[in-house]
Amino acid sequence: MAPKDFENKVALVTGAGSGIGREAARAFASRGAIVVAADLNEGGLAATRDLIAELGGRVLTAPMDVSSEAQVRELIARIDKDLGRLDVAFNNAGITGQAHRIEDYPTEDFDRVISVNLKSVFLGMKHQIPLLRRTGGGAIVNTASVAALTGPGGMSAYAASKHGVHGLTRVAAMENAAHGLRINALAPGWTETPMVKEASAQNPGFAELATSAIPAKRGALPSEIAAAAVWLASEASSYVMGQMLVVDGGMTIGGFEI
Image (cartoon, rainbow, N blue to C red; front, top):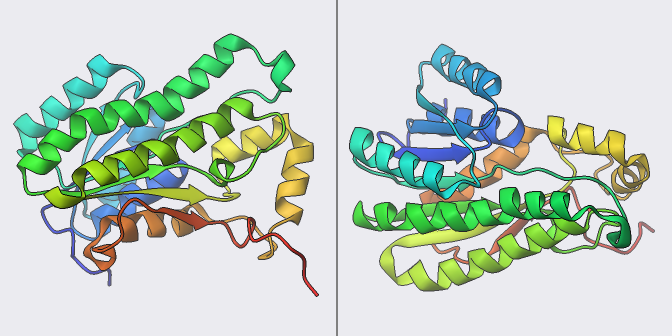
């Protein structure tokens, strides 16, 4: 049985309509949290809601574009009005964008990836932090990627956005560490999510290299990455601040097996 260490706490999860976000929403709910599940994909959100309801969990859904400040502001105001508190924010929504060399990369797509992956984290924290601090602190977890440590060819926008998430997280952690608010980043490696499967179809060369480079010889299950996010949000990581936790099956170790 899962511990109830998030009992009656409010956990906001973006990108909750599938993959890591869905598994994190389910995990928070199983541990007693009231989950606010946000995603642009309303069908995916409905499936997440039904999944949590079947487990006896509590969930509110919020169809939204995380790159829209008006929608982010509206959601935080709704959480404040309806629930009166916010204890955890998992800023997880993201996209991979297209795969092109830099000289061929469409500027419009670059802007979109930066907006969804990086600007959304800035907007999320901008509006989440005042409510989190007002209600006693808590934790923010931002989804970065192993692409925040590496330079995957063809994925300039994605890598730039995830490097940016790492930097934003460190600044926010420094600004809030003395106020009862812990902020960290999560860097998943190759994970079997719908987004990664779509990216693999676009860039099979990258997919083949990535999977062959993982010492664990497999991609992660979304639930394995979600478990790390929940740990970062829990009191079990009470002295972890401003870090980027890499969960990648050893993908970024480097070197070679003897």
